[in-house]
Amino acid sequence: MRSGWRYRLTAAVGTVVWTTAAVSLAYHPLVQAGVGLLPVVGDLPIESATRQELLLEIATTTAVVVAAFAPLYKPQPRRILDVWMAGVKRTGVAVLALATVGYFDYTYQLPRSTLIVAGATLCTFLPLYFVAIRRRPDSGGRTVVVGDSPDRVADVLEDVEDDVLGYVAPSVSSARQQDRQLLAGATDGGRPVGLADVDVLGGLPTLGTTLVDHDVDTAVLAFDRPDRAAFFSALTVCHDHGVTAKVHRDYADAVLTRDIGTDPLVEVDLNPWDVQDRVFKRLFDLTFAATALLALSPVVLAVAVAIRLDDGGPVLYRQERTATLGETLTVAKFRTMVPDAESDCGAVVSPADDGGVDARVTRVGRVLRPTHLDEVPQLWTVLRGEMSVVGPRPERPELDADIETDLHEWRSRWFVKPGLTGLAQIRDVTGHEPRRKLQCDIEYIRNQSVSFDLKIVVRQLYQVGQDALRVLDGTERLG
Image (cartoon, rainbow, N blue to C red):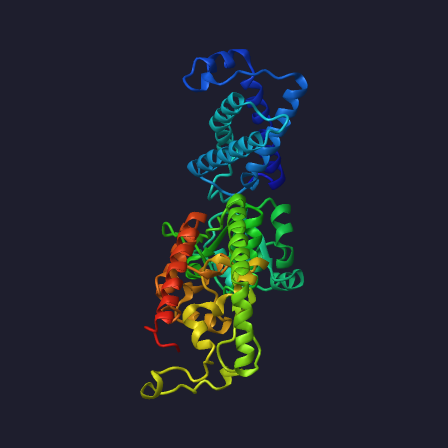
């Protein structure tokens, strides 16, 4: 690939040049004369700008456009249509931002006719510029193998068709030690293949530096078992440096892949939301969580007092859950069971006695659970940025490990931030149906958007309202 900094510099400088040209072109007399002949747009006043005004308008426009195109500066492998669509979208964001500047009557705002001409010029030529400099997908060429097992690295090397620059091991010392090992294995010609035949480039802690120093195009991950820490950490580094990540097909069920063709190595899908989408999602999370906590503050206080008066125990119950890329987070709920309830797992009242209600559930808990009020403290986790409003519901790490023994694809849920609710929840799919739940979560990951999040939240709030009404009407037994 191009050097990361070289590509970024080319992209940023090109954006500045095209923006300057677009604004200057909008003030050219011939262009302004042509605009005056157009319907609707021609009715707008044609304005000129002094030298100082023109420079400041160019500076304002350039700053906005450069910021809007920031997601495209990362040298990730992209296809022509993807680049063009992303460029058009970025131009739309920039034009909307410039129109907003004009709405607040900034001293050197772009006149409306100038904004239309400059916007049209940028929308036509700037996406094409990024198409011209884009990094082609599946370029191969400069490949490294990253792994934690000598045997696994040697096996994967046999399936790599491109020239391999070398490999990366857990640490430099262990890499050098492994480099001296001649591992069993042979090519079709019978020549033994081992790590002694391949250069060691460094250790996992310095993977990012290795990718930059050797101008790497592709990293093939060869972990003996996709470890939740090292494996996903390597994926993150590859994404941050715009390097294509591939895994052996045998381990493709542990990640999101573009599983096309029959090659033994498949590409990992490392294309999350771009910067603007993540900002909008975060703003949505902050707005929703802050508004909900403020609106429910009297309820929160009442619930906390009720729990203390009920049995004198702690108000909150905390539990470790799996977060993004296999990390862990602590979630809090209003306590709905007696203290140390997990030490008395068999205390369930028989169906004949009380409808099969768990005897460990407190009187307050029998109200909180069906109304979902016990989940309210997790809004604070959303404010801290550890969870999102919408995403795969996080499970306990031990339960994740349990499910993975039968469902290896389960790790694919970890590619996005966990949420308070998700597609599985509004479809009434629980952890007792892990395969169906995984299908819902992967569907959400592949189709996520702010509008999709909003639909899920509206549906969830509707269901919560229905559950609360059933409790108030006494049509549902509290348990």
